[in-house]
Image (cartoon, rainbow over all chains, first blue to last red; front, top):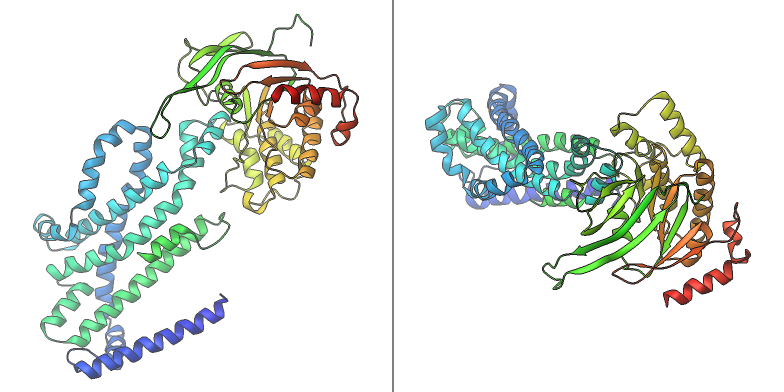
Length: 261
Length: 267
């Protein structure tokens, strides 16, 4: 599809969504369903008085911190385990169990252990991001083209060189799939942490507003979260495009998988 | 090749058995009791029915895989066999291997792919870069150094894989149906290119194919393999003098006769 055409279709979809939102607000009443115009007005107001940025900053900090704390080991450990298959086999059931455990249920514990400040949210986010990135990267490391590995070895490449020149570039799309999938979860986890216990952050904003029955502020918080996720996604996508510039086409199975999640 | 010169490569009573696994009930021998020698600077071609363990043989020589029985000797030293230790793919860069599938790294440009062995061997220098540039030119790939493999034709990728092996100058080059997937014209061109490059350096080449004409056109000597488990069924010295004209090899003296003989053996 031509990009210009897609843009128009997207705009039309946005108009339709706004109309539906307005209709829902009329049907249920503005107190239950804040109308788009009021939400927009409040959004601009909170944006200009700095309130929104203050909360968004806090949420973003928790998400980014957890993203790094979980994502970096999640992307590196599969490479280490490739050289230690026995250790990998031993750890596997524990990693699966860790992946399956609902991390949001751990939020109260993390708050107990790490306090109501930033640290508990960072740990909560990291605990989710780690497993998503780990399993995605591990799939990429396992799926490395063995013919390329054999070729590199015959050409005199050491284990290290094989990891760097063959396994790593082959796994990069999988690492990015993991990162893209975990991105909304990361921000979501930070928000949940803030809803449970915090005095800042978009989660706090939403929680406090809903306690005051201020649905407009709740909608503003949700809108701000969506904008945040889309913005961060654009950044990750740009990094991915740059790292994968050797690829023949822009649309890849991994990308489709990531955007479908 | 004089009779006194020791062979570069000796394969002695080699056997490779693949164990049974799910979906394949019985273990089977791909190669068994296989023996032959390769002389210094010789271009040996091996022809056999598909599935006759030819690729397995090259995997064993290049040490991507280990034999079940028998021995492989390189310059009179046992490199693979019951007594040798862990696999050492390429035997310390003594063997180059051009495989059937194209194994250029898709995330590196053609130029970087050609330099890849030098880079990982720590052998990048102004001199070796120049050598790479000369090879790229000789293979007609000049101007395509910055293209990624998917942007090149199948024939260009093959040429790239070939000069990637030549660039670090291994004494023995193994080739596994390297031109199999190409159209006839590109194929003939690459065969001619190979002979030209071989003439410059006179490496030892073991060239596996299922194409009788290709085996005759390129080889000093041709081995005919049996069906699996592969053994040497017969051996033929190719009487066609060099330099050979690959394009018109069909009319060369002795070609038709040799072709018929090998074809009958493969029936």
